[in-house]
Length: 592
Image (cartoon, rainbow, N blue to C red; front, side, top):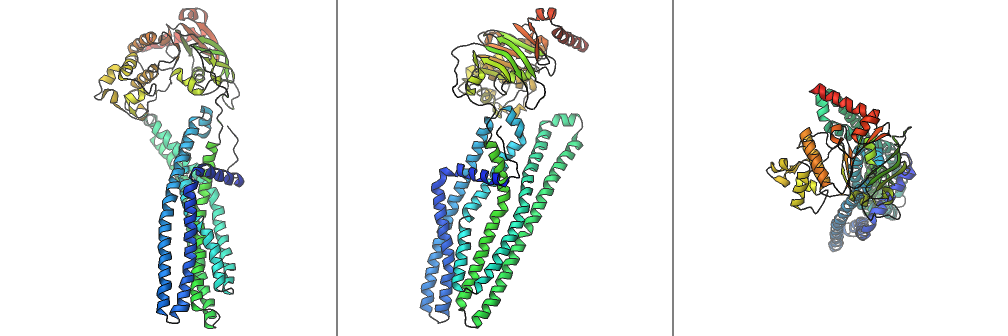
């Protein structure tokens, strides 16, 4: 993974926010230009209205010229109408651009995560990635829509208001030198304290997500071991921690609005006091005092509008940093500069393979070498922790080897595009997983253009056709997320059917028959033997009866190969294999 600056680096945060906005707003330069022009029109119009109002008072009301009042009043109505139309159009384009920005960022993050290897997935964690793709993007999106409506008009209103106020009365304008800095300092203090709290909030949302996901995924274990109170306590702790942090933020900003309103009201009182004295002395027209008071309110409102932005900036900045951290990752597993495409079926080969998990002191695998020729079935057995599942994750490049090479169809998988590797492999993971949808949609994950005949054939091979036919909807029977509405054995058989339907060059079964009874297991192995006559088949199994008739059996112990041969050869020559077989025979006899 690429290095990332720590969360406390403000320069890095600003750079990531600006880079994020530049990258994803570039396609929308046209709508942004329209919004910018319309906001300038609104700001200029709002600054012009008090001038017209002062003119009416000084030259119409004071002199009693009703015609002048009507003419200037009509001009004010026309300006107001233009401002209304400009506001509607600006909000329309601002909303469309902001929503499109959020859509594009979520899409980019999803595509980025799809390129992650297991190392990057584990580094971020699923709860954090979910929060970053949903909550964090929403925070930046809300900041953007506020920025498009406020960021342009607020500076114009503030600077323009100061200029117009100076035009009304230079002496009275000295009050601005006191009021505006006081408001700026007040806002700065609040925002400075809020930024670290918002960063902490996002991390604590991750923690709540993590605890909730663990409880939902492990609900059976929780109930089986009567851990409901413990899990409730864990969730309460994470939830309370998040709540306390959010309360600290809320209390902080609860002081902001009363403080700003106090500054605004005291400023208005000061203007009326000193301005009234100047009007009474004949040094300032009454209309100019009214306009000056309006401009002061506009200046302070512009500052308040900017304050609304500042309220969102800390959280948006923290969220932008977290989003940018995902987008900036260069996956450990990358595509080759000049990919090689295999020209034939060469089976599967492990050549002196070694693997070490990041940060681990000892390698998990070392010196593993064997070949699975087309038409052969090779099984891998070993005690728990011997490296069997780690070995098969190297085939589809969920991890890359630390030493040696894995070859599919005679080509190192690191020299092939990952899509080409995956297209040649039918992988059935240890934990069978089904997607929400139907039986048919899950099978078409393996072959998108599969016909009904091909699906029924794959189900027949996987010994799943009978139970699918028993469902009222057949192939269109609904499947819940993760396949929770079917049994473990049915999930395994549907996962096997999904691999069979694509007819790959290499089949990889990672302990994929553990939930099947012996009779179904035997029928399935016989059907697979007929179906995979031209393919290389690698089977990882805990149950020796599943792989006794394999062409060869590879025995792992401590991440190293300690025996290769048939069942009979290993029983005679391999002590480790003999112990595994004898332990399972003893267990079976004990059960019997």
